Length: 173
Ligand code: FES
Image 1 (cartoon, helix red, strand yellow):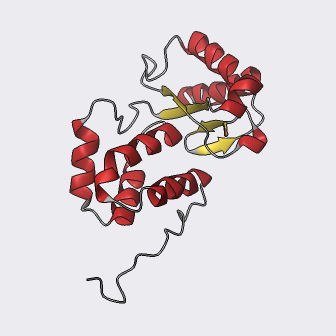
Image 2 (tube, protein in one colour; image 1 turned 60 degrees about the vertical axis):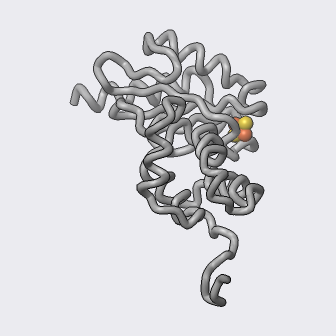
């Protein structure tokens, strides 16, 4: 039996205000906070974020009241989960329906050809990892791209290229 001060309340979202955590909360709620739904929840998180960084794993562990070691264990056991892109910078192109129809696919195609890599890969110099996600909760500003964790809306192939160039210039300076 749970004591009265054992919290079973809904998660409050992430302090960062990142809307993707809200979507993650919904998935967790839909699964009734069941610990045995961990794999499904990790799947959803990876679809949203492109990869599972530590912050996300901690959030899931806390919400499901699971030891972090257990969540890490599952996330590292399955090859389909990617824990951290190896590049210094991370570019996640949203390919959810709204972004896809508004040009997300073209943005991705352009990036792949400019960077000479495919989704899930990192440039040879170790600078940029390219990932995709499904609906990151910013459909109103589609097409959206997440640069190092920051969501940017109304992107075009050109604006994304500009951003990437910025990163490249940082390396040279
Ligand atoms: S489809 Fe890209 S933010 Fe919703």
